[in-house]
Image (tube, rainbow, N blue to C red; front, side, top):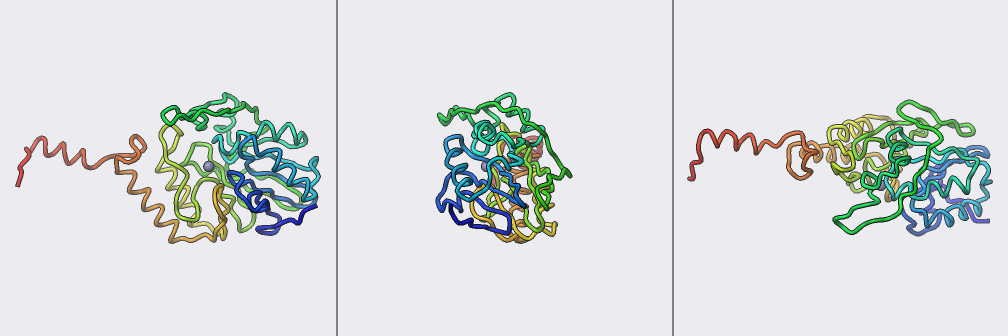
Length: 261
Ligand SMILES: [Zn+2]
């Protein structure tokens, strides 16, 4: 048996538990004899993660849910494998993630980035349950409240547990956000709404899907929101922008004429 390293009461993160980087953050939440996993990561680390969980003395039959924060390959490639190894659990995610997983969509999930020579497996999975805003997942004496926080992608979810938010790819400790990409269904105005919601909430700690947990910092969130507000009016993220004022200026100058000084 190994000693459980709890980040917060009832919350273990598998990279931190292993004391080395396995992939995306894999959170194990437990209460009473029940537990669940939020994301599982790549398929080739599933066996190791489940072995760690066994060593921590969590009965494998008591895994209630395998949750996908969203359908990116680095979060869910191992979901089908994990579901086979944990047959008592129910797989769940947002309806949009369910669709991408059922179709095995390779582009939206980043399994295929042909311009960069990236092409990896994306096993299809039929989720047992879809979940979205306001749903509650009971676990022992606690419940996880589901937040729908689109922006990075349409089906991005976050999960509230008391004063913690398992926050997915909304924001990381350095103020970076989950990447913004038209092919991924990113939407910058929705992203700003999701970040504003997190900023204005009474959540105290953010447990992101990449990197370390951190205390919610309204200034960090505001700086990130301001950056994304800028992107709405810049060419940097192409069709994700809402407008590009330079083109309006140019329209005027085309009519009025160009007057070099
Ligand atoms: Zn991610």
